[in-house]
Length: 391
Image (tube, rainbow, N blue to C red; front, side, top):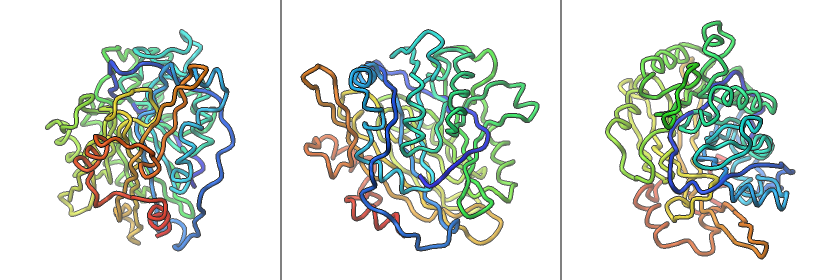
């Protein structure tokens, strides 16, 4: 996380409605743990950028109960992989639910509402931008979206996918996308999140960007961003697809390729709660792009093996020394595995590890990694991670 600020926002709204959502989380940040390794810049700032992506942050009740009792800070859940987040220039997650405890209190599935403490835990411990466009975006209706955005702005955590007001969009005081700076340059990465649905909750004030219903609008946004000389890359983060399914739906594949042909640099999806394939795609104008269809969960209490397996995706972009967007240079991922340990006080301790640090990775998990993601793009050790991030 070498990035410092962001401009405008909207939130990332999409789909995450599973019977496995058993609980809730959030709370107090602490100092980030010391990095396992440090990197020395080997290229001029801004010539190359590395973006990191993880999946859904779902604050189930058991996660929150642990924090209320132990006051550890939510960042302890991902502290074992903190350095892998910090070493990217910009790090992204999907914040799956409102942060508006003033409205109905903190709650878990099926209508999420998170404590404010989750935001500084993310901001101060690895994360630069979140999506708020997902199927739980309207779990506290319009006022919940407004309060969530206010809280994100309070901690200067960039966001995309939802907006405070459609009027603000019309007046130009808000945008659906967010910008994060490329250090050492005047350029930014543009982020645009959308969701397939909002669990039937009505969007009475038009605060949510929808991937399929608003596809023409999204294409217009891409064209507008593509025309700007200060945009290094355009990243779309759709919340889409069917939960618990590895198969890629035809309408999802069609939408992804359409947006890449329109000018997006990469598409990184969420919602299925399992990892899905990474597909490279050469656009009609001969650009190298990709769709990562689903990163799986990041923080959650979903207990089944496919739900505890996830990935940290790295995309490396290179300045091609002209006024066009940066070129996609490299793609890698780290497999992630979440452990849950029930302690004497009956609380559950959660920790996210790189799969090479997992003491007992189930055979099923390894099989899923190989079948869905393969080994060609896989980082298999801390040493390989260091080498990749130092390139």
